[in-house]
Image (cartoon, one colour):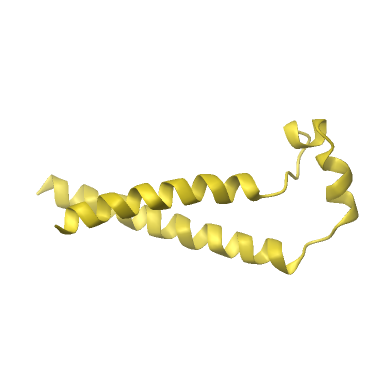
Length: 77
């Protein structure tokens, strides 16, 4: 039962990580600047929304890593 809960949590956090990472603003000269992202990144500074997005991404990433390690330990035994 615990393994099933961890698998479901792993899938949910994986999808959330993909969405959260895609929500971040591009900071380099990659694809975001090709489509006009560089103009908007110069106009707006580091806002509270971006700081909260960073925190949420780190928290979800930590939960994802804990799920991976716990599933690895459970399946090894």
